[in-house]
Image 1: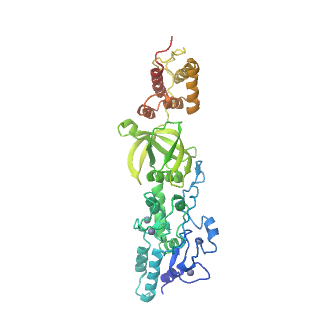
Image 2: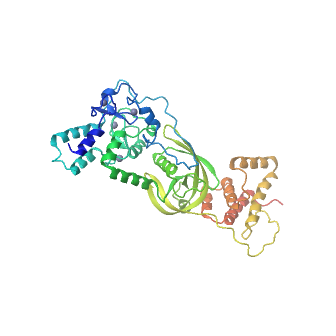
Image 3: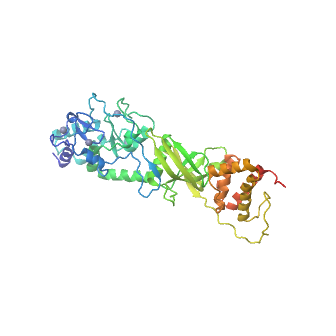
Amino acid sequence: MTTYTADLQELLQCPLVDCGETLYMPTTLDCGHTVCKSHVKDQNCPVPTCAEELLNEQIVPRPLRIQIPSGSRVDFDPMPPEPQTSHFDGPEEPKLNKILVEILAFLDEQDDIGDALKPKTIFSSQLRAKLTCQICRELLYNPITTPCQHTFCARCLRRHLFNGNSCARGCRSRFGGFAFWEEHPIDSLIQNLLLNFFADESAQRAQASITMDQDDFTPLFIVSLVLPGQECGFQIFEPRYRTMLRRCLEHHHKPQSTSGFPTMGLMMHTAAYSTTAQYGCIVDILEVQMMYDGRAILQVRGTTPFRVLEDTGSRDGYSVARVELLHDMPPPSRTSPTPRTRPRLYEPAERAHVRDLVQICVAFLSSLRRHGAPGQDVLDRIVRVYGAPPTNDPGLLSFWFARFLPVGDVEKAKMLAIRSPRDRLERVIHWISRVAGPEPE
Ligand SMILES: [Zn+2]
Ligand SMILES: [Zn+2]
Ligand SMILES: [Zn+2]
Ligand SMILES: [Zn+2]
């Protein structure tokens, strides 16, 4: 036998010392170990070191589990274990790993043909054909073998799982829920074959996978209006948004948050208004709670408005775009001194200094108290729901008012495009004047 055939044979040894033979009727267990079918007596893996290996994530990677980077400040609550489901069907006979059965047959052929007739390139291409993912048709990458003994790339399997809870090859046998797959280790034997015989290609695929996940585009969650300073909760259940969330959590997409939270872009769901279709708000992802049925519950906080520079289409079904962050412009320097008289409530305030505008806004809040108990009640409710007014930050104050003043979301979304706190406060004062009516004498 040539060395590569010998190498292959060595890799295909049964891991049980008592057996020590080339695998015979190999079956791959949920832990990622492959043994001869005859050793499997119950749902426990017969490999003595299995439990330790599973604890050591260096040895047994779980590519479907969301990996939160160490510096991330997101409060991440992983999926709880599924309520009591056994993935071993008791009396059902363990099935055989389809790929390994083919490779063992291939190994037998090698013995018969002999080394002179088999140049390495032919050997490689034949082996490669067997180590192909049945979904993407490429060389397997992070292979996961399902209980029905089909093997797919983790990424392909994940994408497939979004659309249903059964095997991509149409088998009807047991197939776990989301939590089962999140904890599912890779098929260690097939991984070994890939690393031994296709090291370069595997490394390329790893690199390509990282590049695909990390780029300059901002993922957009097109769902509703969020303004800077606003905290709100969402539930994510659509497959495409779960993929997006995973990438946001794992790779901290651009724009990278300075606060250490993963970020994404939020936009209103509207096609009718060109302004709102171009502007959105970057949010920090503060908290994520994963549910075992695949849903995710998020708590986010709006930070910086953005404008879509280039709509780069969709990635795995969700939108991405190149965006420009719209930080507030510095307040204009005061050129002509304006008289420091107390501004009248609701007067057109075009030239008024930002501080005066803030005072008008604050005066409106105080004016609510003049309406006695009902007014105080409204004010209390506003503070309870929206927090205390950020009066020391005119930029945020304008968004704070915008959140509860009774104007439509489309109008509010236009605030995202205005980079001058003064201009935004003027708009707020305009809205206030509509609410408040003429100033009481
Ligand atoms: Zn064995
Ligand atoms: Zn095991
Ligand atoms: Zn694949
Ligand atoms: Zn299957």
